[in-house]
Length: 89
Length: 361
Image (cartoon, each protein chain N blue to C red):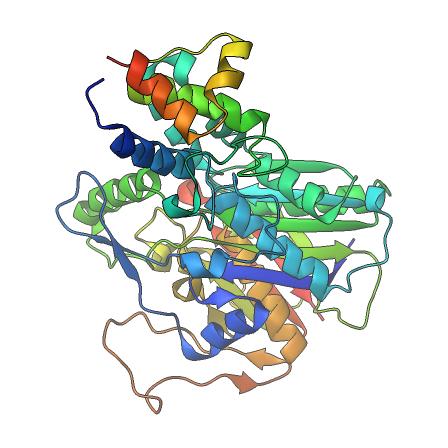
């Protein structure tokens, strides 16, 4: 994918807010290295993980099927953006 | 068996809370919003709930995935629950019923569009789970910690009437001690599109004036067989009749003090049917408060809430003006204090079906 990484990160933040209905959160409140899951950071849950998988399929044509791979990709906006830039056509 | 209305909650274009409802009944409806609908060259009028009215951090806790339909329904039920006490009833003895014409159809069509656009392997799991009609009832029980029976009745014409019958049965059978009976509708492109097409077709047939703009919102009644100090009135379903109102079996033989008529959401000819329904036993006074909150499939619930409020306050609200012209305060009809002991609420639907509720002191 040719898109600039910082531009892609902003795009992903906006997509997360919209697709996960993250009320009262703005893109600038999501740090690039903030944990997406767990007790810190965005505190997303398992249903959010499925929504992110769907969002990657719809927006970038990417299919994340392996659980372990998903854990690595979904750590933060940084890891998510790097995966999308590397694998999306 | 008559049920006591222990509490009321409402949210609509005029605001949230029974006081907002009372205010609109007294002073008239807010101006409609004009919404763009695909397929129509001009925006369509609608009485829409402002998004700001739907923000309540405490009541809507853990509901970020909920849509407008569920949020409106929850807020009305939350307020009815608070208005009723909250009642000292065991959680497993409280039931929740939601009556609706189209349910969360905006979410349902979003889910279906997702399948068409991206295939069935890429549909949103949240859209899927929230496209189920009973989701709003589920949110009510979860948020209020209730464990009694919960169900949703969906019907174009008589959802609220059927829900009233169901509440009456459950209370009579002692399946529960209190029922949170909600009615909810959400505005959406599909509803507006269908409604406008039907109205356009009828317009060429009879040329009568259009009914009130469509509305959205939720109203909830906390119903029980137990009297409380806060009671508004009692309510019972009127027998469902078809074809003509002469079949309408009323529990009392004397004419009601007031008849409240609900205009059908998809009909342009309420006046003609009003006359037909009322002609066998014309009541002294009639009202149609539909313009106050908008035309809705479950409008009978709103008329019943207006009746309950009228009886509690012993107030006859004025007939809302349907003119587009701005009226001065002196031109507007005023609410008047009067004795009201019994109000019949009738919903007139297509193919001459009538459903109703009897609200008494």
